[in-house]
Length: 281
Image 1 (cartoon, rainbow, N blue to C red):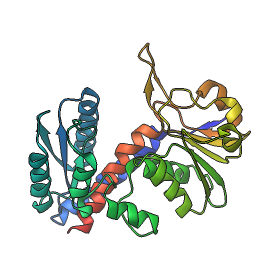
Image 2: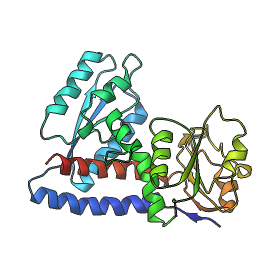
Image 3: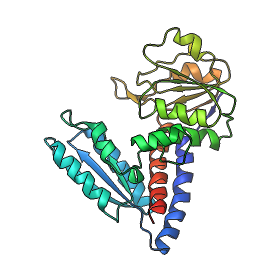
Image 4: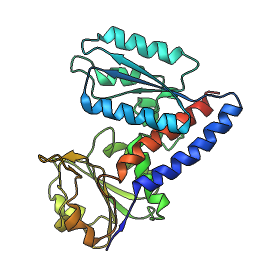
C-alpha cells in the first residue's frame, strides 16, 4: 500500500503559516496585494479566480480583479498590465489563462514586471530558475517540490522522469528537480520507448493532460508517483493522468486526484504573493 501524499493537508499548513506572516507584515505597514486579470468568460477560469480570491481572503492578502471583455484589444491589455506594474499598492500580478485567441499570451506575460510575476512565467524568472538564482517559481512545480520535501522524500541522486514539457509544469519542474540534484529525464509526445524510460524512474511525474495515461506497466516497483493531471471524464468525474487504482499498489508514495497537487498550486501562489510583498517593501 502506497502512502497517499495529501496535498490538501500540506496546503492548509502552508496557508496557516502564511496567515501569521501576513499579520506580521500588516503590523509593519506592508499590505500584500494580488491583482488578477481575466480576459473573456472562460467558465473554468472563473472557478480558478474564485478559488484564488477565497485563499487571499483567508490569508489576509488583498485581492483586486480586472475583468476584461472577450474582444479586448492587445493595446488595452498591455495598457492595463503597464498600469498595474506602476501601482505601488500591488505586489503580484496574475494573468489568468487561457485568454482569447486573438491575443498573444507570451507577449502579455512578458509585459508583466518580473518582480510582480507571481506565476513565474516571465523569461527573467524562467532564466533565474535555470541558473539556480532566487526567483518566482511557477506555482505547480513549486508545489510538487514542497510536497516531496514535506513527506521527506529524497530527491538528491534519484532518477526523476517527467512526462510532459509544458512551460507551466514540465520544463520548470524538471529544472526544480535538477536544482535539487536529481537526474532528470523529460519525456513527451514524441518520445520513443516511453515505457522503458518511465520504468527507470524513482520519481515519476505525469503532467501530460491525458486521463489515466500512466498504467501500472509503466511504473517501477516502489516508485514515487506524482500526478499533475486534472481531467474530467464523460460522466463528470475528475481523474488524473495516472491510472490510480492500478498504479497505487506498486508505488511507495502517490498523489490522488483531486486533493493532491491541485491545492498546492494555490498555496504556492499565495507564498509567491507574500514573497513579492516582502521584496517590494
